[in-house]
Length: 67
Image 1 (tube, rainbow, N blue to C red):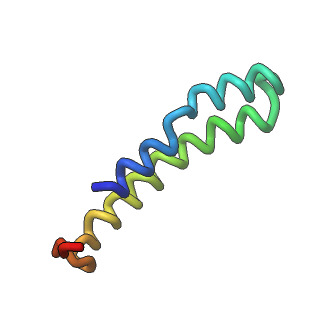
Image 2: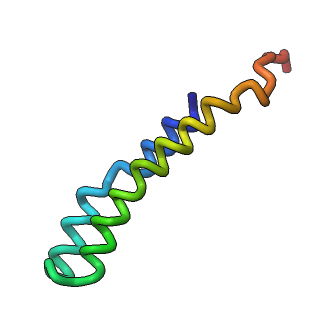
């Protein structure tokens, strides 16, 4: 459960990144284009990583030991 939460939390501020790149470099810049395309690539990759994490949970022990 922690893996999907960590990945989603790490990618929360993409709107700010797009706005900043557009404001600083203009609409026709490569930086603004890369920022937008990066977000479009990030979502399918993140979903694939979440699926991998969920499918490999049986690899790890769920036993809780006392300290």
